[in-house]
Image (spheres, rainbow, N blue to C red):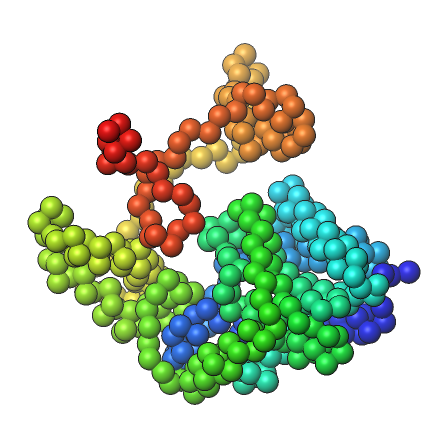
Length: 392
């Protein structure tokens, strides 16, 4: 017998029977359209482009859903044979996600005998954003508290729960369903990102969330839906479909040209600080332009003064197994042997045995100095200036 009651199963079945579609003002893209409202309509004329990262993430979410349902004794079909990107790491991530979810549920059950648990639930927040909806990975509702848990499989960008608009929209959608049934006063939003060892949680009073919806979300969403508002460039541009063609982004990045590539020591401190704040965006924009131009050229577009050539090619064996057999038959060892890397060795031995057997042989040298904004959460390193102060 499932631990989830009939009400919850009905809600989930309603979602699974729906045709998949995407909201113009989706929760997943909210960081972009809340910062740059007109980008929502600007991107409408561009086709959706899939990527290996997105496909891997989809497989990971499917596996997470399966492992969580298993843990909750919900009958479900094993999807593993249909997962293109399935591997040991993904399995470990999904299992860890299920364990974490059970821990949260156990905590809720300490004060609520029959909490609501929703998996891959459609969350409609159209009360605040026209036609707005999304899908919550996991929603747990108990007496006084609403938990929203979102799984992130990516390992490139660290995702924080604090002031995360995607999570806040999910929470508003869940409140629209259950705020009148359960006496909810607190909202807890968690990002579970195992490949970055990141479990980030933001907790806020329900009234604070409603105030944000009234003061920020509703007026900005109205601008975005109508294609109005001010263009605004920032790190969210990397996820915009119109990022290559956007004139505002081009103007923003070309502002650096005013420095005319002067020698760094000849620039004032204020100029260096301004440049540092724009360099990452400039590099990203330049790479986007290069990728777009190459793709168009390969498809037949002719750029004046440019041509497509073959890049450097590396020789490879057409049949590695046969090559190894032939070389081995001649009395040679066709393989190179080297010690497994730490990550692979840990996978081979398992975490517990790895720590017991090799823990004393592992060291982590100091990382290479990197200049980052003050908002970065990593502690500042000792610099030569600080070392001098300590010596005196």
